[in-house]
Length: 374
Image 1 (cartoon, one colour):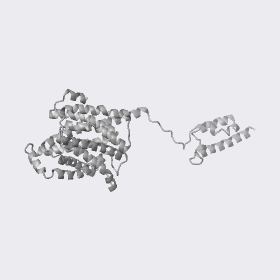
Image 2 (cartoon, helix red, strand yellow):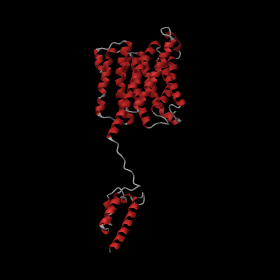
Image 3 (spheres, helix red, strand yellow):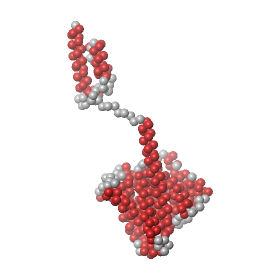
Image 4 (tube, helix red, strand yellow):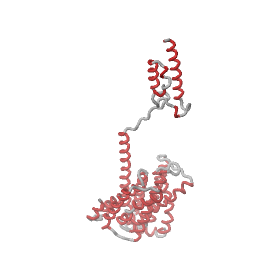
């Protein structure tokens, strides 16, 4: 009897083991019946256990509870500390982009105003500033430091509205800065986040919380208050700033949509801005030639009676360098945040610009202006 019972247990054990192996193979049976390494071992042995001896059953239970060699290894969950460090690193990186963006933008406004004071031809200056960034782009692409973008004719067509927004942003700002005070331009452009929020809702269908919209009011009001006592109104400065304001918000919204779904190959944020700069420069030439082409030589001759040609050329090159640098970094920063956050940061940046112009151009900051800047 003992021998017969042992033979019977062995046969049942072999049959049950074969059944477990068959169930473990992917695709051999429907998912609902696959229980190896996933379901408790008691379910695997529910039928044969009454027929096994107690010792043999215990051996089988231990064997069935061991994970299958073919079973996928458990996925390790990310430690909270690692996730916190990654979030902190991302925050610091984004903050660094914003700091560089502010620094180069301040440099651009100072050099741009100095150049326009000496040579008041804003359309030509805008075109030259766009041109300075083109050799920089091609140097990076030809040397392989940055992968060259690959675009089809359809891709270029898609980018035309974004490049028009880029062109309008630049020309409008240069015209406004040339026609009036720096502070007045930034008063008008302080409403930029409001325009960005409206365009994000209309073009992207992106809506934000009421608290986000409420944060726009003190930012806009503070910058306007900071510039109030320096106000010097001209209609040309007004429509230039309004044009730049709307064009910037449009460019930010359309660029965000383009970066979410890249157009062409190797079209990250830096290359996207490089392509937009080339396209905007080509579009700016007709404006420069039409408005200031005939008077350029006379304006240059008059300017060189006040400053040297070397100083003027150096100012324009540095102006273009700062312009391209702050815009490329701004595009990288935009890729990290939403358009409305980008516009809010752009508005806060204007306070830094106002403070910098106070130091460089000797403008006095009134107590009302100081309160608004905070």
